[in-house]
Length: 151
Image 1 (cartoon, rainbow, N blue to C red):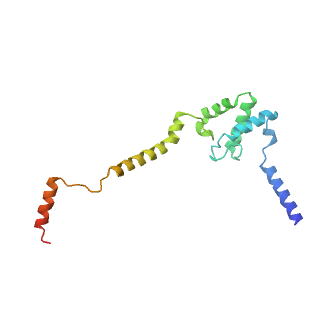
Image 2 (cartoon, rainbow, N blue to C red):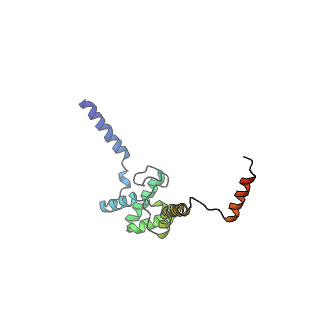
């Protein structure tokens, strides 16, 4: 049993080493590398779309990681790096989009449509009368039709 656990631990260690990034890609300054990694967590892999470039193994993600590290190494702020990426790839590249009125409209419109539809439905159902009264002309026509009906 212990031998099996040891083999499992060795196998897990090998997998971790295989998944680790190439140390040559990392920035020599640990503070800059930490900043770059934090930025990479908020940048979407354009191939995988639901992963950050920090988690993705796609070639484009590796290229974007290199771009982020170059930008951080050049002394750009986090906002400048993100602006560079959004200028190049659009706001879709950010996993956490910036606050803007366009985004509020995009996310709020479905809720607004549902609320307006529910309000309209409620108003229509409330104004609906159960016993509709006939006009005098309609009542006279019904009376005449019932007199001529042989049944």
